[in-house]
Image (tube, rainbow, N blue to C red; front, side, top):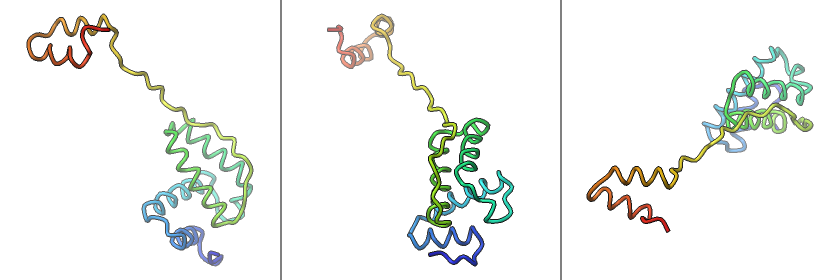
Length: 139
């Protein structure tokens, strides 16, 4: 159990060290917690409640205004989850924040006609290697 007389961030560090978290994880989580506290203009521990609404607002702002990646938003959420569960010993409800968008990944694949044109523009050993790689002629 963390020492309740410590400042919040010292308490977070103490719990993380007791649980043997990596120093980089500690720094990252502390940074997210500081950003969360600054975002809401919190001055005391009482300002941390109610947790669910404040976490939703912060994470939604990250997605909409901060335009962060999904993994970044998840990292912020995990830091706040750690703060509320492990340090403050408070549970919160289901967080319904706006989720960051996953980028659409379109595969880059040439059509058969495009491959034929590219191979037709080659000659010699290079053309032979490309034909072997593509299984020329197409089955």
